[in-house]
Length: 168
Image 1 (cartoon, rainbow, N blue to C red):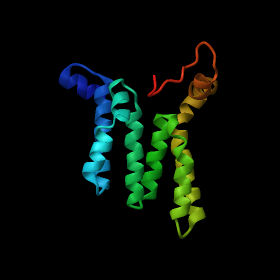
Image 2: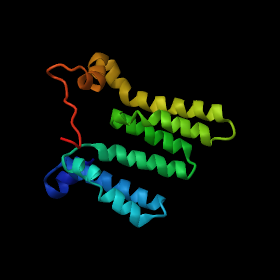
Image 3: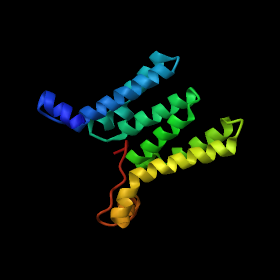
Image 4: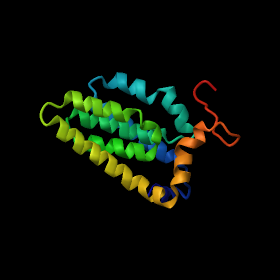
């Protein structure tokens, strides 16, 4: 849909336009959820860690939006939408996986009644959403999917992806 709108209105498409929209939406939802709006706005919207990757076309802004929405929904005690946003984030980029156990540990600590049932149901919803996202690729060629997600960055072969980050 972003391609169709951008190409129709401006006769061009640049993925970075879409990423800026996701980044600004993450900032807006974050501003709505916090009481320290000026501090959050400065810290988030002017943060060189986020903005540098945004201009080079990294899709971290998409998972950042989903992660901000997870926090917004958890702040409002809406567990189901938070779980769905976390599942969508892992469907977009697998690097969000370290947050998954932290999310479920947080739920376990916050829930009072029916803790086991709610955790089981939320985990099932998380797995179901991820299966909907990843199952077509698993059925198509699970070896290439596994190789692209895990093997590409850790194999150490000539074709592997060098680890690069903020330090060069």
